[in-house]
Image (cartoon, rainbow, N blue to C red):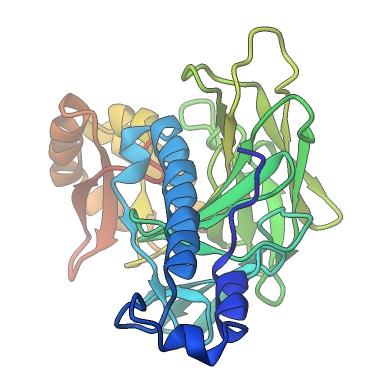
Length: 336
């Protein structure tokens, strides 16, 4: 896996150097590419699909439920559109950008992939963008309905144990570790997560708890650290018994994307009774657009949805309603 496949940019450069008489040869395909160019493109795409498959196998099914396929843009990048837009760069050393359109204006965040060397992205069959490296760590980016996931594929024990994701946050925003967020014993903030909090103390986004899996599906110890305003993921893959490749994943999602208040699996289980709804809302409502009074008015409906979601191993999310709030079930993302 360490052999670098020809990137799309390299293939295009080669095609420009092909002599005119070759372009006129009888075995030329209808698009003007020679058989060698076609073979190189196919090799690049096959390699990208193989790496995307490794990531898919390592990723929990519930996290794949909200994936959004990217599409190639005219400038060579890869994009998704909607209330949440994601732009995935052609070059791995450039950051992923996501913009969230709110009634108050647009919020934008950029997050570096963690790649140390240039590598051109290839759009895989599953809609993710793959950056294959000639070194020991490749990367992929997968857009989601709420933001995006960035994966590092550590191919062997020579791969670094730290992956630094350079950040550019909305003006006035900062990173806050879960341990430093408002919480109660009944409803603690998601362990290991890192939140993006604006200047008013409102949570506008979050990096879900870090995870890393090896080739056998076993968890690999991993954690986040906030360092110089950036997000650093440490993956202790030198532990005994680790099988390569190892996949590590920071997942970013905007908060308030309807706007809604999302409950995770634990918070959903607590909310199967009306008193539990109030416990969770009293904690999370401190930085959510859904207020405590809205939860109180609709506690019975919310708890009924929580019962169904808990039985189906789903989660609930609460959106403002004309009177009170309304609960809906969802999977993926924060539902862990």
